[in-house]
Length: 283
Length: 342
Image (cartoon, rainbow over all chains, first blue to last red):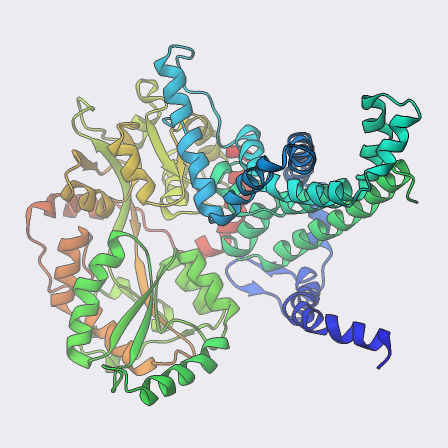
């Protein structure tokens, strides 16, 4: 058997699952997204319209939600990167005795169900939640801070939930980096900060890229946490798509929005990885 | 699809291992609303059904929209045999050809049911009569509210909750305010403009009826646009609530029961519907859920009868044509998102 063929055999189980459970349903949605929907009667068979797509670009509300989703994705990614890099660095380079404890601390939240973690944030952040009650009791605020149903709540919740993914990616990248290159830079007279900025950081770029892409994609497609912390009023694209499907029963519109989200995601991943590769001198 | 393959396998496995009780026990899957509703369903509908047929009842709780979406997705091979849904969704399902019309000749209790309870071509039947009205805390409110306008009183700013439009009370409140403001159904502009400040200052826009219970429990609100039947259940558990039917008229709700086309146990499903419509089950459920019966032979008694509307209040109720509402809902929802929530 040639190496190529055995490679195909190795990926074929995953490929099969992806094709059946992901690509085929996705392809089936393409015709749906061009159908006309008559409320109360359902989809018009055999109809063809571009209106579902046109509406995304012309309706100010949809644009606002799209923009909000992108801002959220970028912000959560940046927060996770800034908070995750020091943790990952400490895990790899810090005292080995702390390594296991730190790694467990990072992984532990992943063992809890997403709904439970999001609900935990509701308990903390709601109007009569622990945070607001505490601040009121010590007299710092008179009326409860609005920590939910807005960007603040989503940023807090999603950053917490996706931080472990970023840390794990960065740990792998830092571990893969040969330490001799840092030693070489130091022995040639580089300062520690200079070594970090011009050697360590660029060499961990692949980890930064994959971690960022992972967190970004997970954030903009997250449904459960934004629904729980954003309520019915603060919508992101995933909750909007869910509502179009499940509440309005307007599958054509929901499908069009789904494709908009998918294409946006692919475009941003492609663009950002190209930029970062250039920066890291990998291109 | 999956379950079709799995059920015979499970039965075969049960038979092979001689699982106790696996004998002839058929299972009827009922799509229901959650919370107290499901509990009362078990007592008043499922128990007599199991006693009469020997078949077990499995509940699948969700709201009307979720049931409708899943029936459409599994068109022709539904995962439920009987489904409860608000009439607007029942009409939509019927128009999409997803329901098996009921055969009145096979329902022994059909002659006793209110004529207004039946859907077009008997595609579904209302199983009870509820309402969207004002529920208030009788300990914190010095005088009971009498009108929808009381909700907008600045005295209660931030102490009121209304439902998001995804729930029945949400759109029905829009309809009630719209009628009060004299707006046409086709254009709820007047209502949306009036509701906007209320929605912005509301303690919460609830999406699940049970969220209101905890708001009342924690003393976060004085008034809610809510269901008298839910209030009745909450009062039973000790909350100091009362129901006010606004003078402009509350909005009537007809939760329906229907059989999806292609239901695996259609015959059992028919039997279940018949039991739901029987005078005994109707009386039991009406008293447990504090909701109006559709069987004309039922006389509701008990201390919670006062929560139900008087004849005068019932006559004033606004009943919205489900067909029209099913057509208008997407537009209303989109406008709600844009003109109220934004």
